[in-house]
Image (cartoon, rainbow, N blue to C red):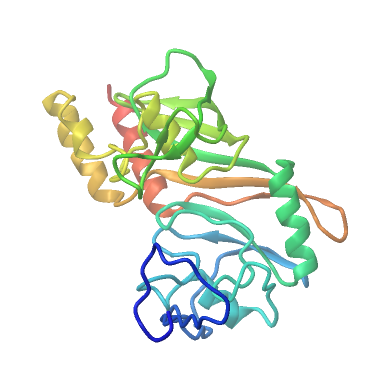
Length: 280
């Protein structure tokens, strides 16, 4: 203020000079990279890929390269820019270690339409998840608000005053200490399936962030501890796969019903579980 460091209590008067110094945030230059994409559907307006686990969706702090965005820039001639400079084409996201279907838009008109469909919850989203323990019923729902954890701001939790969140699930297969379920998301909160399943004491198998690894092994007998440790060694992530999307094409208005096969690590874990179950 007037060439001197300002006091917070200072009342600004006419003709005083206010100077501000600040650093611009670092914005990396984005380059296309020849990263293989498993394309489930593509036309001139949008592209849907089966994202592998481990692939980050868009650049961020410490991740300027090797992302899905870099792959899309290389593969697509045009991408929407409604979501900012670092997220061309990105309409929605999946966690780094969640595999499965993800839609990207090639122009802003398509992007806006898809974003509206997500906002209005007219897009149907189905997942496969492998969780700890057994459900007493074959179908159910979890209706519990989700917000940031007051203990760890990087995590989310069921909390009073959180955003309304609804998850429906159906049991597909029961194993000795795990259950394969199909999940339908009625809302789209960050980490929703992971948070809701942990809330009902069925965390996702392999989830290091929400209690799905070693903390559950100690509850098993010795035989199952050995099997669980073997399976966790095969799956270094949460067992969650975005399997199916049903939505309306923004321009043709055709109903697209797209499915993505599970990735090898998830499928191999299920094969071992089925083999073990057959011998019991």
